[in-house]
Length: 177
Ligand code: SF4
Image (cartoon, rainbow, N blue to C red):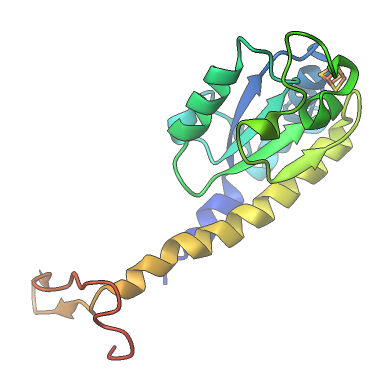
C-alpha cells in the first residue's frame, strides 16, 4: 500500500528565507547542503519555491520590511509543513533584540515547530533540527490523511472504479465502513 509518509521522509524539499539575519546562519545552512555535510544525499533539496516546499528554514530576527514576506511565504506553502527557526536571533531577536527595526523573533508572525539556538547555529545543530522537523512532518502527514475516513469505500468494477456517492457528510458514515 502507498504510504504518504514515505516520500516526505526520503525527499524533503526546503525553502530557505533570510528575514534580516547577518548571514552567519545562512552560510551554515549552505554548508549543510554543500559537500562537507551533504544533506542532499538524504534527499533534502533547497527548492526556493514555497508552493513546492515541506519545510521553511528561516533565519533573522524578522525586520519590519520582511515580516509581510514571511507571512506570505508561509501561507503559500502547502500542508503539511514545518517551520524551523535557525539561530538565536530568529528565536528571540538575539543580538538584535530591542532594536527599532526588528520584531524579536519569528514566532510573533508564524508558528514555529523547531527552534535551533546558537549565534551562529552550527551545521550539526541545523541537521539535528531538520531531522526533528522531519519527525514532526511525518506526524502532521498522518493528521492530513485522516479526512479520507469521511468517505465511503470505493466500489471496484471490472474495468472502472465507481465513484458515485463516495462523498459523505462529516459523521454520516461513522462506524458503518
Ligand atoms: S543568530 Fe547570530 S549568526 Fe545567526 S543570523 Fe542571527 S546574528 Fe547572525
